[in-house]
Length: 72
Length: 514
Image 1 (cartoon, each protein chain N blue to C red):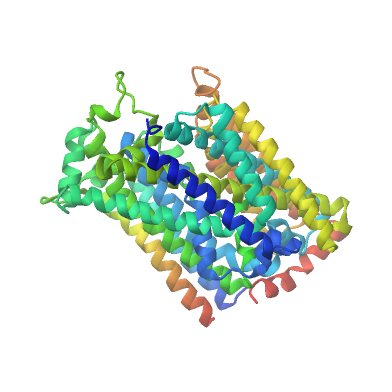
Image 2 (image 1 turned 180 degrees about the horizontal axis):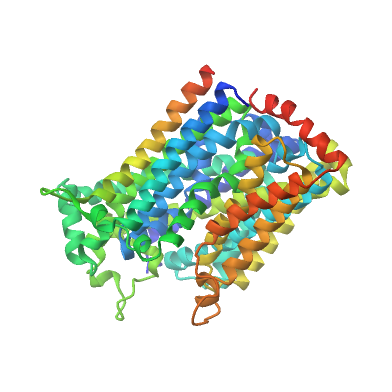
């Protein structure tokens, strides 16, 4: 299993899971930082923006993966 | 509450008529077992992506998550983030190899190199436990929605109506009808989500900051609703929940069987891309919907009973928000869409259960029906009728129970039993039939036992003061233990059949990436 497809699976899954569990750990162990406002003008928190970024990033990663997998 | 609204009755009848119409049209194209169980592999990636999104965006996701955001703020998004992050995992690791190795069910892919006489019954039992848990939770939820729509007697009408429509759709139209019902429902749900989010946004002058500020000012937890409160309180349970959410989807049988409805692995992968897009977009809409509901209805007495509880129960937040921003008609429309959502999801679950019994269980005792389309079709339809009837009776029996734990249990079993088996079968050459059996039995028994002894059942259902197992869900323990059981079951297996199964891995892997 040293083919390009396998490497793609490992790299993409690894990145996603690392970001995902880092987010969970930050929510669990750095609650004040995650609840902080992103700017003084906006009531939205760091957690909200990171959460939205993970959702958007998940969508983007599936698109990128399928392009890479089709070439492999 | 809505019983006097003629729009409700009209839209409800339109949904029922639409489901019946789709089923009758699909029945003409359902001529073989392959048509019935996998739509003959003729569904396009875009259609399958919509149907997958329809399967996943259940009433629990639509009504349940907005209710969770309403009561706890950001903790509702923790679930949404976990659900959406699970889809790339499904796509990267499962979608194309599963399609390339199987025909109708997950057990097909495992039977490629393992002893199918032993594997199929095990996978069938795990799948049926998952499907029944999911079905009961959805059908009990259906009762609440219909009760809100018409004020009907829950037991006598709501569940029986959902059960009858579900059996009709699946029995007559099979996978083709189920797919089209899912697609229509997904479009309706996405449209509804966009409409409610837009109207909520408009109510605050298109200023999201103003919406969030208002939500903070009216919620008793104030700015704490902007970050998770659940995870800092119990980080281990939080991480365990994260595991169940991100790996559970890859083990849900009603999601996995949808990959057999497209023609090949590449289309299965593309289906997952579309599904991730639709589901991710829908979950992003929960930001304005969830916080909008807090801002607009949290302190409005029109949506609360005298004791302060929300009218119609906690899960009606989205429905009340639609009324607040769009009046009676939009509320009736949202109720009708919620009903369509439930019909579509229970139809998909029933079909999964039927395919598991007919293809995985009966195949071992009656191989003739598998080769004979007419007899196989008859068997599968008969199984659908029996399974649908049992599910309806179970939903009636559970009507007064707190069944919220059943969805959590489903994800826990899927992540702890099905996911490890599937991953190791697809990517670990040394796995053998004994390893699969050891892992499957361990994952299933441990998940059910630890869930029953945990807070969700031991405290909230049985009423004991403290749980025996505090981890909720137990995936942080059950998933690694299942991997270990698979590992030791395989490495300690020195049988001749085990050696042959290991030798077949290279051929299986080549086919899985074809």
